[in-house]
Image (tube, rainbow over all chains, first blue to last red; front, side, top):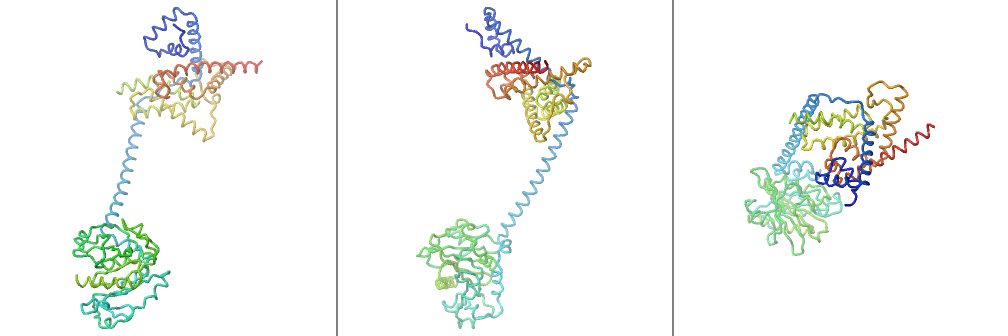
Length: 337
Length: 170
């Protein structure tokens, strides 16, 4: 048998070896003088280090009563429980506030946003659209009466696609129509001049929107949602209104050119709030799932008119003439509806 | 359970204090930390209490050392720290000699690598090889090797220290 390794002799003297190995080592030591010498040297080394370390000891220590430590442990546990309780309470308050805010936003999705984002220009919409006072020929067009010719019906409006909002204001000069003079003051349809239409014709579709199938959109709206007849519908989105109110509905349709136009139908306040968004903000980031055609780089426009307590608008990156034509088609569709 | 903990407390308290003292070199602080270790043990009720006690003690000592560095507080062994109490009041000459011997051992201990020093102190605190291996992450078979090296280096460093002191005094 070879000599016992030094580390194993340390472990042997430290009683860290299995019993069987100890027996083997002891039988070897009985026959091997060098290993016995090594064992004795290691034992002396071991004793010496133990004695040296013993000098590095504080004065004789007496453990304090364990009851004292138990008391400290119990006190600490109760403090931690109190802290956890306070933390949980604070967290529950925060969660409750968050849930409450979220729920109120779902119930009144537009009220807060409209107040927050309506621009001064947008705020002029209600002033321009009240149903009583006579209007100037510039901002009043034909009522949506059944007698009015189709080409005179659409109301008009406009934020022409211009580089700056300031330049946009004087741009539209709709021709006065004879029909407008015949329009009763209580006409259900009114013209609205919209300010603050964003550059690029893109609208901020904030709030919680839901995508619908076309059938779903019809069911949701109670009737066929406003759209331009003859164009394929690519998307229908709705935003829930107050109970008892019809929802805000946006129908996207694609022209043969690839441009997408959107027809918006909803309560006057909601639609005007939607159109009165801050310039420069993009629909891309706020409209869930709203596709943006690659070729949509031109300036945008929006035309809108009021019909009773509803407002209808058509938006798209189209020349104003084209948009006006779309409005006429929309007006026709509404008459049929 | 309470009786078991009482036994553990009575049998281990002094070893924990000594273990901590050799790390923080402050007797009162070592006792404070030892009591903190047992308070935590009462809250956690560890499955392997002895190894757990020394593991927590080592962590507390590390935190203490970091805090001491931050405070730039220099703890000294010889000034103000009561050490092993003799049975009789030593003469001033004996006290100086004792203090020099203690400083010499401490210096020798400081020459070890942190790993060797940790293993040696854990062994001296009464932990078994498996407990040392579990706490330090060392392989069980390497504990004996490390202890052998640490013991030899400690004694060698101490002898060098004594030789230097002897030459300085003569």
